[in-house]
Image 1 (cartoon, rainbow, N blue to C red):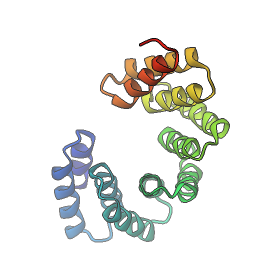
Image 2: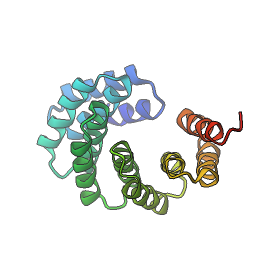
Image 3: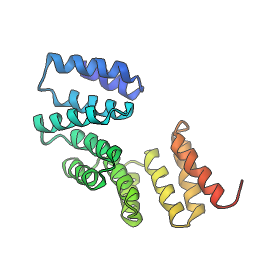
Image 4: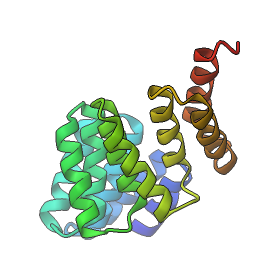
Length: 184
């Protein structure tokens, strides 16, 4: 059930993912991975308090689970608790140093705090670890735009779109860059 939950989550079939994660938890209450997966699913559904409950329980059950800290990082971002998000992403990175997504999401938190140079460093590391990770390119594109580097911002947004044509955020940032350039 937990593996199928992950599959549904990757396909963005959120209700199916929650049903399978819940069944995995019912059958094996101490399965931290199912709690982490359900946490990530609740975040995508916008049910942040439910997500936080599952993340906290996953960390309690498996304090060395990078996935649980990473999922909770995203819950904190959604709650606007950026320092807590940075802390949890940092813990996920400590536990799994090659986790490009954790670097990228920590970059998101730094960017939201207005710490653009630190965010840029995290996006660069995410791209170094996983050159095909579209989210890091779009995040770095947003930072380039904040720094007034519109050509670099467009290049990163274009790369994010090339890697993931369904990444609406990359299109949005690219549109903002074009607007800022006066290219209506």
